[in-house]
Image (cartoon, rainbow, N blue to C red; front, side, top):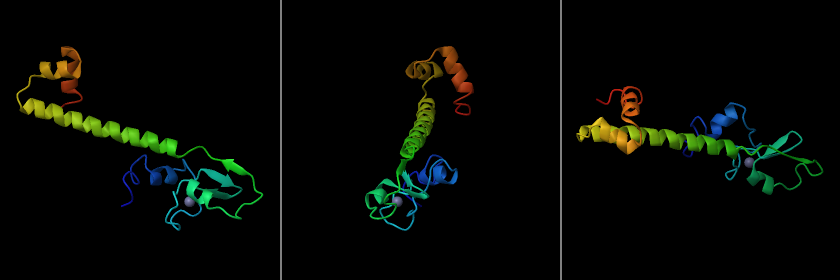
Length: 129
Ligand SMILES: [Zn+2]
C-alpha cells in the first residue's frame, strides 16, 4: 500500500496508468521522487523534486513545462471527499431513522421539500426503511 489515495481512481498510479500524466524518470528509484513529472527536457521527464536536483542532465536542452498533474490529484481528492461525505450522510440519515425521526424531519434538516424527501427516500436512501 502506498500513501493514501495512491491506488484510488484519482490517485497517482491511476493518472499515470491512464496516461493522464508522465512519470518522472526517477520514479521508484529515488526516495524523494514525487513520481509525477512536471517538466520535460527532450525525452526526459522529471518531477519537481528531481528537477531541483538536476545537475548536468539536459543542460542546454530547453525545459518544456508539463500541465501540473497535481491539479488532477486535487480533483481526485475532492471527489473522494464528496464520496466520503455522501457515505457519512447516508449513515447519519440511517441513524436518524433508527432514532425514530420521521422523513419529514430529515427532509427539513436536509433543506428539501417533503416531495423531494420522499423521492430521496426512494432513490438516494433506498433500503433505509
Ligand atoms: Zn522524480
